[in-house]
Length: 112
Image (cartoon, rainbow, N blue to C red; front, top):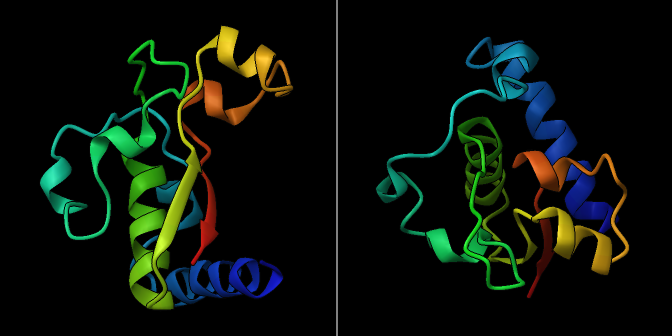
């Protein structure tokens, strides 16, 4: 997992240096994903729904764009463990009251 985190961190640094994307772009947390076809080769919209079954899915485009780029660069399939969380699910799963999952800005992943 540390290797994957290092890979993602290095990738984000590469993007900044290449000026393809800035940290400001990555942190733009105002735009929701509306076109899931961009991510279809690797991810399904339902992968990011709240796991309690309430249907909440407010994953931000900037979050998905960073995840997609990390997935492409790593060449390793990602398993989505947690995407969006409603307040109830977040509380029940022991999440922080200020968890980024509540805002669609966090995704927990693992690899195969």
